[in-house]
Every structure is written in structure tokens, then in C-alpha cells.
Image (cartoon, rainbow, N blue to C red; front, side, top):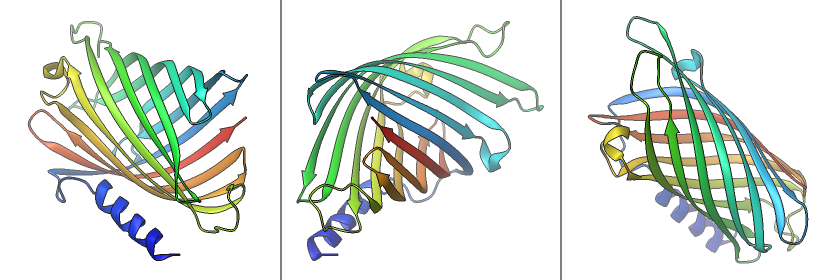
Length: 241
């Protein structure tokens, strides 16, 4: 690896490092995800991702997320999207009783992609989402509406730099996403800063249409009176047609 690439990796790792090294509570969970994008014409396409996320110590399935969108391509590297998301959240009370909260979202986003040098692909994503959180029980009046802004950056660094177009082979993935509550934060966690997700993974590009990767995600969650650091083992599949 060339010196400039080593420096890039170091800088990105420093950038995605969580703001605090110690958390009040540490959790360990597993996530599985599938991300798909489909180009239908010069300007139109759609995307979909489905995700399954466990609770601490893989004790039960906490989140199921389904998220489709319609995409408009201004250019190959400039894409706008309008989407919907459904999130099913399972929980437990202090006495062990099960809880369930549905969430519906409408979201808008813009993604800009570019190259660093000849081989490193970088994507920036800006997303605004409107969150409609349902009640945790029929006899509780705890549903609410909130808005959140998210900024995501992801870099793909191929291990082999023998072609201008990365079509096959192993790679390193680095990404970070930061979340901000922009409306009704007092119902969420009382903070403008909501959470941060830093991620590093090893992947393999099977073809231009299919990637698989496994890595570690560090999720810093800001709570009303405390904070949690969630250590996540993640496996993800990416398909593109």
C-alpha cells in the first residue's frame, strides 16, 4: 500500500473514532443487512434494504427494519431518493414482560460519490427523516413525532490497485454516520446529538453486482441521562443491478 493510502486510512480511522472512549454501559449485539439498488433507466431506479438487529448478548431480536425508496439519478454519482421505512422494535420491561413499538418513517436523501486518487471510492449521504413512533402498549399514550438528520460517509479501498474500475477482489470498508435530532428532541433523548456509528469491515467483491462484507460497528447512543456503547458484529450483502 502506498504511503498516501496508509495516511488516508489513518486519518479516516481517527475521524470515525467515537467521541468518548468509555461508556456508562457496554452492549454486544449482532446485525445482518442486505442493501439492494436497481437502475431502471437513465434517471430512475429504486433501492431497498432489510436489516435484523439483536439485543444485548444476542438475547432476542430487537429491531427489524424494512426500507424501500424511489431514486432519481441526476448523474451516475449524484442521486436523490424519497423513501419509506418500517421499524419493528421489541423490548423488555424491568420485570421481563415483552414490549413492542412500531415506527414509520418518511425520508429524503441526497448521495454524492467520488474517487480519492484512482482507486478509493467515497460516498457521502445526507438524509432527513420524519419519524412516527407508535405506542409501546394499547393503554399507553407514548406515541410521538420527531425529525432527524443523518450524515454518512463511506470509503471502499481495494487491496489490489491493478485496474481503474474495481470489479472483483478483497477490499477494506470504512464508514461513519452521525445523527442529529432536529425536531422534538425532548421526546427522543433531550439532546441535539443523537448517536454515532463508526464501522470497519473486510469485504469481497464477487462481481460488479455483488459484495459481501463482515466487520465491527461501534454505536455510541446518547440517552437522556446516560450513554451506551454498543459493540456490533455485522455481516452485510450488497447487490446492484
